[in-house]
Length: 248
Image (cartoon, rainbow, N blue to C red; front, side, top):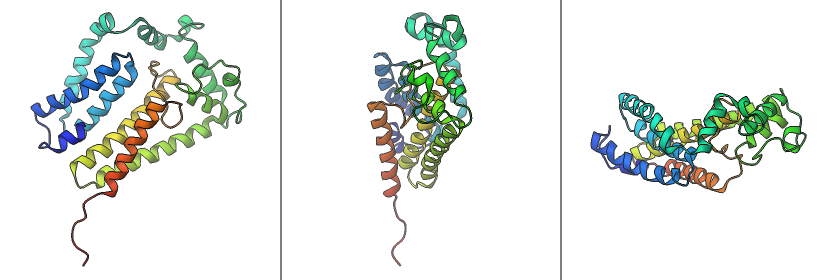
């Protein structure tokens, strides 16, 4: 939606265009956060921000936005974040403070990743997963199971395939002749990258647990449908590029 709107406006975007785009991004983001699903809401906002950046938004706007988020953080902590969300942040800072409670998930995930070693324990041989130490094995922590059973080699292979997908989206964006296709393909590739980055950081303890699935691996109908729909739009944009010149 943001890409379609910016396609119809002069680029780089002016202040009025940015404000309208912010409303378009903010409505679905706010509705998702009210569910509450903070992680998905942040990813929706990030996807919209990528579209604006690809449209030529000055980088100093990014600095202003980051400063605004930092200034609003204390207010969000006091008034907006729910107790379980605060627990996730505290467990990110020190999982061992409640190793048998809120910190259990991330501790067991890191044990699974480390025990996989170089080539893993083998398909179906992961002790952390089959003894049910890892929670949410098919959703948020599915990549932890893969890491334990296939090791560094399996993780590296999957990440390389992810990079191929992201690179293809960015290549299509660079080759697109119209702004809509360029913004759509570029934002889809970067949003896919953020999904991978957030889930990978989450299961390894580098980021708080926010309930974001690993794309195309974690079980989750909504995530799969939205990503596949995005890739379908990118492929359509590539297939319907205008052709200049005639046949002779």
